[in-house]
Length: 76
Image (cartoon, rainbow, N blue to C red; front, side):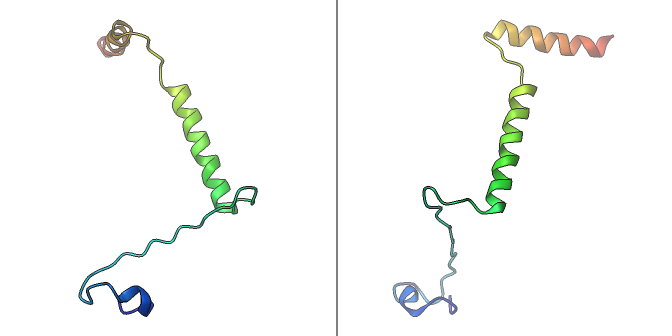
């Protein structure tokens, strides 16, 4: 708390614990920092993987049939 500028400390309890969050705003049209671009690529790859890895079911019966087939694999 003592490291905050005085104008931020004015309305706060001096014995309180505070948390400061800094968020960088990216202006429209501005190039994203490299780290942000890499993070976006990672999240895109993760979303693509999840889409491919997750079977798409249209009914509860399909889900039950899938679970039964997985369970039956263990019995073989």
